[in-house]
Length: 268
Length: 304
Image (cartoon, rainbow over all chains, first blue to last red; front, side, top):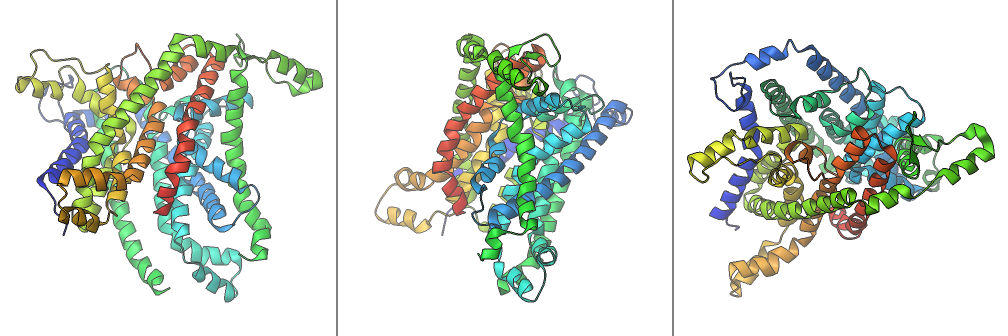
């Protein structure tokens, strides 16, 4: 039997505290009534109320959400196709080049991805705005989607698909009614990651954006560059709350779907 | 794999050609443009570089274009201390903070791996959860804490550890804190994944044979977890080199990291060719550990 020593518990405790304390401080400060962030002026929801009147910030939030919906969906479609190709098509011609191109963006620094996409958009004289950022975010997220969906496809039981085909289901039908439902948890997780990557991104959006497409991180960055601001504490606290709730709901959902999925796999 | 499958229907070909075309157009091609512009000269024009590739001019245009290219920007990047120091600083910060991450992350991963299975799942979720919030927000949270009159100094003053509140922001210390905070899950998870599969009977065997616990750790646990450590080190080291947000918000302005230098050349000095050359050199700098990664760490990750 393994023993959990006091040192192990201390390491875990300090580690978790280190991860959560800064966020807790941020959330507490967002309720600080004083304009000077470091001086405690009592509890207040004043900064949250002020956010509601901050038109540019609300605009930026709505652009960020639309952007994330668009790019996450595009990236999920493209990434799932890439994962299918890499796992299912054997050694097709150009597979190595294809695999290299799928994985390379994973290690490319954001600054370079942003710079190179901007130079492309300038070269083809594209009007920069919502769609250029959407294309950039899609490109950034495709590889993450591929990796997640791929890992699920590798564990996939091929005999289920073969059974469907043997019973006369055409390939597309087999995909839609057998493959897709079984890899759906991975696709949903990948979509969520792509969404989060897009909402979080500052660097790539800064390079590829244009007039009228200021995203929330760009807005926050330009506000906090020179120091902390109480309104920004409130914005950040809201984002933390939304993301926290989404991840917890998603992991609960994954558990439910996973629990339902297991008997099928166990039987095979 | 049947013959029909290998040849592939039109549908199958589309399945890989569409993402391939997308990545070609928006990942490979843009990088080739960066390489091309890094060989150009700065110009006061729109776009601000010369020569511009002009297909309409035909063959003469191509010849004129090739003659216009030069390696001047690379000479500048290689000789000007601003750029050289920036690369050195990036590698230095990445190396030292990766070491810090290992020292902080290993005990956490080790501790998690020793708890009961059910607890492990919760602890892993708790470790990953902060990673889902924006990096910008997590770095900004530290700006609150590290202010001169912020909570960290309040605590230090209250404990009488310091007489004067020290300035944390705009120092390398703040950069290290920000990096260790942001990248901790990347170190903890791969190390945990390996430790959790560690065969307990090996440790028991060592104990039965009279090996002291620290020696068992050194001779058995550590070597057996080396592949997880390697994966964690590379997952941290590579992205830290190109980091922009952390040094920009927490660090000082006197010695920028390479990500900041590219940003500054591009947005500040509007020198696109030099920014491109700095970027190309950075990519080659990163290729080395990545090739290493593929040979050493990838098989480990794929085995999982």
